[in-house]
Image (spheres, rainbow, N blue to C red):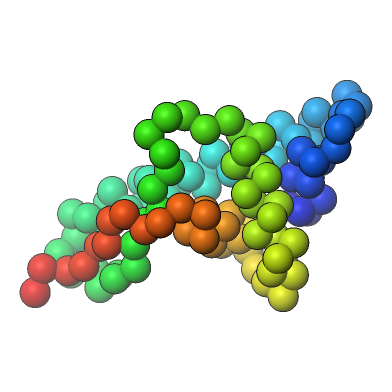
Length: 109
């Protein structure tokens, strides 16, 4: 569903029906970004948390949703072996691949 709805961004001309699915795609991507921001924010306060992976860093300038969707679609097409994964994991991995990890969360032991 994620690939089907988001790859509409690649179409030169989009119908009214396409607009619905494209807005779904944009909302899904933003939801993953918001969830990641919240999760990493909460984990940075938990000294007992053992998560040692980093968080991607989006550019400071706001990025158009069309560009974010293209990043996700590119990742999905390059990694068809992962298409059975949860959609939020796919978006998260696409963003990590596209943007360097800028913050590593490690426990203070």
